[in-house]
Length: 147
Image 1: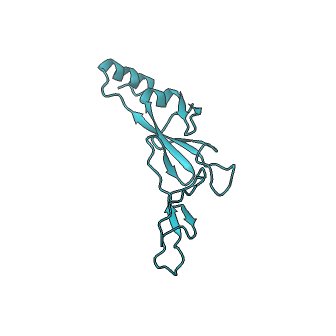
Image 2: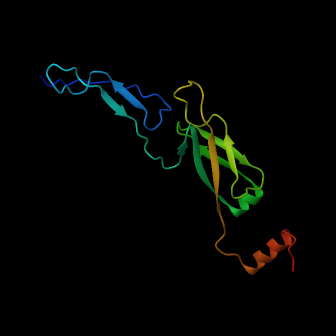
Image 3: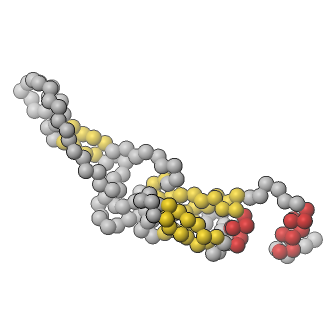
């Protein structure tokens, strides 16, 4: 028996998911002299991303939005994994469980070339930490809740 150094090439396919297995037949250790070398098996792992969470082929991100923007609208900019900037307009009043779904801007499908998941934008509503008496009064007038 002898030790052999060999460089093996892995062409990573965009969209591979956690636990994808790559097998190199006969490239593992040889336990006994007359036995064949074992297969070398490599498993893919995903690192957590600071902005996106993956669910299947969908990418999910959370965007902070102020209470004022929740009520009046806003254009949101999201930088994708491939560094493109996508704009999404919030035109309706955002409720706590609302989300924007942008078709075909998620992860590519490893099994279906050309197909992608969706980009899902969820909202984290930032409420003001305090309001003056005047601001409270003005809000009551706006919402027709005058005492």
